[in-house]
Image 1: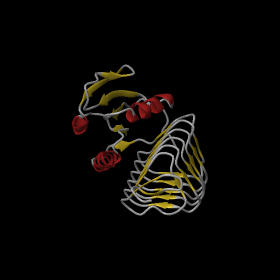
Image 2: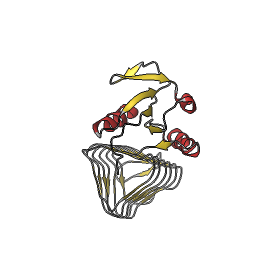
Image 3: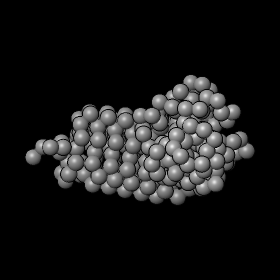
Length: 211
């Protein structure tokens, strides 16, 4: 579940694009005190919180607690693992407008955004981001570094392997597996397994370029 508000400072790692701002907004909504940001872009602050350095400067930061909100899921997991090995805490963020069953399991550095429902016996691995209004049902498994777009529907027994990327509005039948590092385009309807490393799209979904 989400960490409780604490007096200990938190540094949030940002990155290009809007994903990190959405994660930051969720962290603030749940009462996490974010005192500084790291970002490789040109911004000087987000929501009045100062940018104090680039993402790569995290080892020099005094904070013991971090939020990793960048949209690049491979980079997010890489940084999160490095922080954990260095003895830093990587927080899980659950927006207060989401519902996560107490009988679900969330790993380290997970981000659950507004309107998400996570049902009993769902398992979400480390450094996964689940975007707004997605339903994760019983016995679903989202492995390390998976990226789930807004408005997805995963009924029971769906598996999203590590570092797979699922676009907005994807629906799957029960028991479907999306392979490691696969990409599923927005609006796809998954009626069969997606092999590792492939890109699928459409209704019903099929390999990109297939007819």
